[in-house]
Image (cartoon, rainbow, N blue to C red):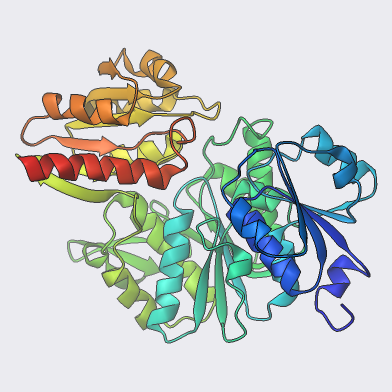
Length: 451
């Protein structure tokens, strides 16, 4: 490892225990083996999804079905996948025995030389990450984008890359120490992952770590929690806002139109932005601010805004059947995302929601009740959702998404919109939000074919 850029991070003769064989863990194991690092893989699940690939890497000892403490104390470093809580007793034991905590983002930061733009927040971070990458492509810049969005950060490493755009979750940020990004954006803070973070303040503080790791800071002037994290701004802080004309990037009313503007200079009309919904105007402003830090020309950035139509499972129209519009927002995995989805649509809505609420307070959804014709609720926390929504709208409780779609078919009338925006994680019934969204689309399209 003498000439390896990892030497400064890992030291001599490192032994790395990778905990968790999801996409992050598997990418880390591939990377470590390419660099000749001795490592082992541990997963509490008997048959984790990446098991076959890890066994095929060669030179990796694999242990499943538990966390044997003696294996973790063997390590000089422990890399814990984002899905695994750091508070697990076995991981704490390894750290108490002197192992250093590292992350895939630390490894990534050790070996890349191109600038990194990073995005976090409760909602919108995938869209902003993909949008900034599209702006760079429009400018002819060799760009790679991923992280929490996928692909995993270590699978992005490319000597020809000139700009990296990373989406970072709170779980990734809490275990990252070495990232030094050109720019970091915190888009918003709403309650999420409170089953893993002590409270909302602790969750926000983890998100705020990105600002301290970044040369430029991009922050939402409409979110008091975000502005508190930013400490009032500074000369390398760019703000964006849907409401304040004093923000660096803001909305401007002129000639009967709403424009996206920088310090009073109108740049592109809101009606030209391909992404739908007011919340996506905020995402567009954030992306423009990040593009500014990366020297992406405005012409290219605005061209991307005119063509980028979003990512799968995010406010994605699926079908219009007998006058009823069906929309897939399976990525609405927390209350704030579902609030934004409902507010961005005209009523009346039939809301399909439910799953694993991650300890969240659902009560903010009550304020959206005037738009919701009926809420069809499924999954683990359907009863908790019902207790919030029953006072403001009709509620229907079902077991699963298939039953929810069937119930929506019977309730919907021409002019209605059926919105899958669960306000919950999917892991009680699905591998991930993508599988949930895919099932929704297949059920709707099967009905459309039969109609």
